[in-house]
Image (tube, rainbow, N blue to C red; front, side, top):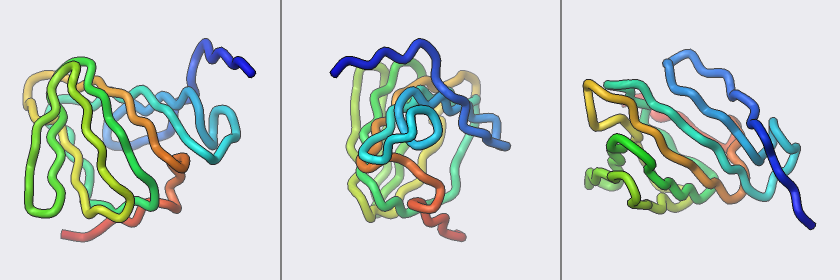
Length: 120
């Protein structure tokens, strides 16, 4: 099988982050994995969350900050990071003055109901 995606489907957000899903539940109606192109605005930060999927991120430009289990790392262009299912994690743009562009691969596919937001 071969399947080319020429454009993704924008996942609606209200925090300025752009999620362009190329494979997954809303774009290709598959649930086994999702692949999305992300652009996080300068200074962006998501609430803490626990996901029911593994998430692999690949940074293209900018710097993505990932806080998990009392540790914070920064992922720079060309670097990758795996956040395992069930990990309490917070994602943010490490730069206050530039966008962060990255790709996210989730196994199984990202679904809002597979992500539990945590009040901090």
